[in-house]
Each structure stands twice: as C-alpha cells, then as structure tokens.
Image (cartoon, rainbow, N blue to C red):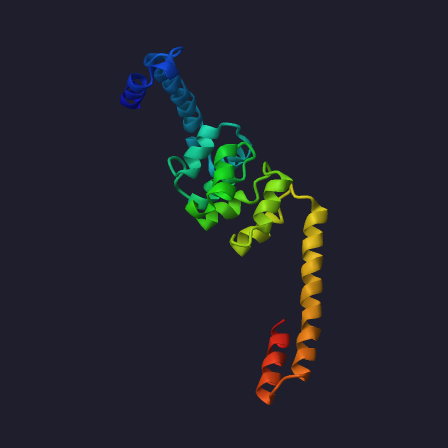
Length: 193
C-alpha cells in the first residue's frame, strides 16, 4: 500500500496537498492496530461470546474480516451469517452486494444480507420486486424486520387469491378442451395448483 500511495502522490499531487504519504501510512497503521486489538479480543472468545459480539459490534473492519474469511474461519457460515446480519455492516457493501451488483455475490451471502435490519423498507421492496432475483432471497427479504408488515401481508394475500382462483379457471378451461388429452392436461394443471 505504501508503494501504491507513493505512485498516487506522484501522479496526482494536487489531490493530496493536505496529507503526506507518511500521514496516510500512519492512519492505515492506526486502523490496523485497532483492528488487531478487536481481532485478538474476538479470537479469544468462545463460540457463544463470538456470536454475541458479532451481533452487536460496530467495528466494520472486524465484520468485513469475518465475512471475507480472514478471521473466525472455523464454523464458516455460523460467524459469517451473524456478521452479515449486523446492522452496523458497511452500508456500501450491503447496497452493492444486494442491490447494485448482486450477480457478483453468491446466493448464500445475499440470503443473509436480505435479512439485515439496516436495510430500508424501500431497499427491501427493491429486492422483493426484482423478478431476476433468486426466489429464496425474495422470500427471505419478506421476513426482514424493517419491512412494513402490511406490505408483506398484502403480497401474500394477493398470491393466495391468485392461486385459489387459478384452480377454478383451469378447471373451467378444461371443460372446453379441444380433445380428451387437452381436457386431461388442463385438469393436471389445476391439480398441481
């Protein structure tokens, strides 16, 4: 990172007038020290304490380290899923993973993110109404505590109504089938519903 910052400084000194490369390196080291302390604390905890810590910490660096598999690698998804549901997770990461570039993030990660309580009602609606999104993720998003419960119940009641009335429509359609095979085929569709 030191080499990179030096090159940035060479090519764009106007952007870095106020801050020297040494000052930036000191800031990076300072943040690493804080993370090292937090990581040491987390690594020394038992499983139950670790889960509780990951639910409540406001340290984005530690949360991202767990999500990226840098720390607490054992028991994989147990710790990762807890970190993904922490409301203090990086908003940029949350938005990019779930809304902006979902195709670049695996389905399991998006499932856990869809239940993150820091998502707004509008963001959850975006996930639920995205027809290209995985159905599991859309269904899990309906369980998000930030979602207006009236919205979720309206979706479910409309779906039940559509499912219930389509059976009768398919049976009626079968009565007007063009052949016996067509009649049987349409009855099978109604049976599936």
